[in-house]
Length: 211
Image 1: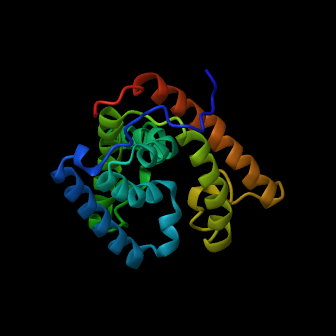
Image 2: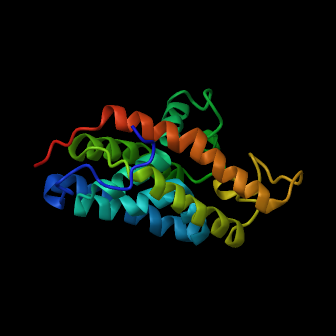
Image 3: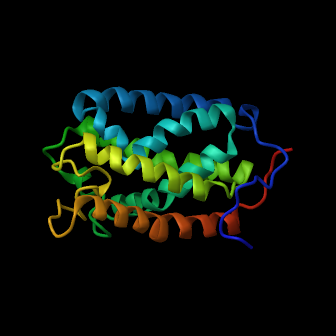
């Protein structure tokens, strides 16, 4: 079977009626609170983190019951979000991705909101994948989105924030041309995260439970 699929294999595209109202309202509230607080505390550039992009985009995905949008965001962040949750529950002994959650200098309410959205996001994604099935068009679509988001992030964000690691792996790099690094970073996202996620979701969420 081809890795890339540019045509949906589902006759029914899904609708908002396929998703419980409480889930739509609850997740929308989480997203609104997080986005308002983030704007004041971290600035609008922080919304370019792929996890924040997913938080925003999953709101219309829920209300529309849109399989393609949900699948695309799952390809983008489901594995990183699961790694974040695992790191959080192990008190950041698994990786360092959630280490900021144990920094007493960061406001407690910020850490609480961050934990809330990082835990809620994969749960909502799994539910939508279970109900609607996985749309294989998500892989090429998310690859294109990343190709757009990464350069924008580099142009509008500060090296100190290193959003989406566009300035370097963990810290700003100076060992290669920054645009070449961005291209290699995009390739790494596609090969290390997007393709493995695509293959797993295609394997385990190929069935839609709506008609």
